[in-house]
Image (cartoon, rainbow, N blue to C red; front, side, top):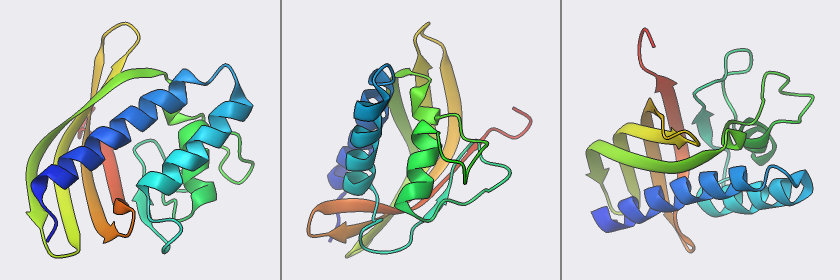
Length: 152
């Protein structure tokens, strides 16, 4: 059975990874390598095709593969020309406020808001739903949907 603390730890790891990727933006080779490492660590891209609908994607809304997810986080892919690298903001902190968490044997789903803090201390509030599966390496995301607030 997945427990709440595993979900909270996975969320913390996701936020820390986003901050770390952005901190490397002055060395894009290192940044790209770190983005791939973190995506493979956090998302079930090696296990299956994932359901990923990132916040700022309109032309190609869904990102089911490692390549597509990496493009969203750091940009630079000709296949996804709208991507400018969400992780490259850079963000200094990410915090989650869960509205609810559903726990099952090998699956968990969390929904709520997460807040991204930029270099000037301003926060951007985003709605999210993350689905997690239990793997031999711990929880990994297989469902990620996020959006800016309606009217925002």
